[in-house]
Length: 563
Image (cartoon, rainbow, N blue to C red):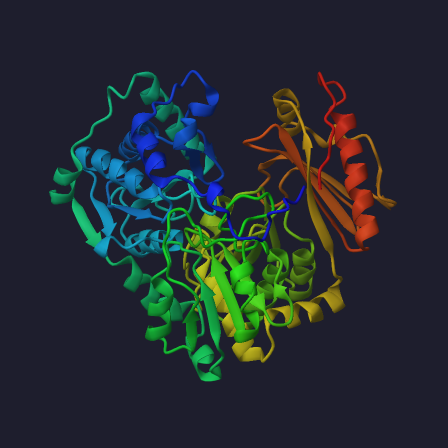
């Protein structure tokens, strides 16, 4: 990736979004569904877009919400809907629009008490808590709750996002989002004529609109998943940067509730996110796994025994240690897995470790040492939801710093990503071992190997992207990669046999995966080597040649890799 000269620096005024204009565009710009970029399109975590670009406007939210109401009716889901919202500028108006439609459709809606912002894991936790032990009649969905989270996650301030969580508490699977997407776009094409809606003031007064204390409910049960007593007894000093996100008021409550030595760096909420330092590409992005975005907390790392941050909807974590600074996401996932499966004796003996196909192979080696089965799936945390629910997965994690794991007793905690619990787990690990996760990773790497990794991008036409997504292993015409024999070529994830939307090529000491971007005319190559930087660069170079050869029949060969 080409690093911007502004990366890691405070955002200049010229780059800050004009919030009033952004919100105005949400209401005044009307999307035209004849243009694909203006339609409803669910990615791995919901529909995202920008009101300036006609890709996230009131019409989108009204259409999606009506489609969700129809889906609930079709599936017999008639319990309450838990509605959460983050701190992006477009989230509050989108939440209001959604409530107008939900209320008009007679849905019982659970809004946050005191209009508190709502992290994604708090919504997942609420859905699962409500559904726990409920009797299921012949219609298995009857009486169960589901949810909506209004968030574009760590995306830039001008973006909006809308995500549906079915009764399993996780992000909706592709069959669900595909149905909702189709129905929503039909509403856009018919100028919303079949969308039911009522004024917000009336919706707020209805008996079907309820208040729910997400904050207390989530915080009060944290000790069921994290050893808070150990953290308290050790007296370690914790530093937290909420990055102006939905969990901004959760951290102080956590510190008070469990009497921790916890300092919140800032509780500032600013929809322009002017307090952030710019990410790698010179844009504001609340990504706690990016050292460029995490400059504020990194500058304070020596003040704390362990420090952490979460993204805007608090479903991703970033761990800062004295020994290593910002720990790469894959490094911390390996540490967390190694620790949890040795320190949670009540977990099911057959519980597997969930990872995505582009996560580090050091996780595979940790699993082999622990004698735990690996469950490898395509990108997207939704693939872990059912396994976390039934206890067949003890842990699910992805390379973008999203993870969740079971309670101490082996019951489900959240089935969507949870940034808070993995962050606090870093404190538990430090408290109980006397070493921070960075130090523990060095010991792991000394015994299992220390991989280096990268991600590069190359241009590709829409036709080429489609071809890449449909590549089969038989189209890869080579037997070696960077001097090693190819052991496997995958187009389906080994864990659930679901299509990965590209290919993964594996050798004894490295691998690469090539996948098309869902939003840009590029494809991405993820690569890793256990033999060092030179070997990694050979993998990257040969990976592009392999992909180019596989796409040779396309109208134009991709070119122009950027690192």
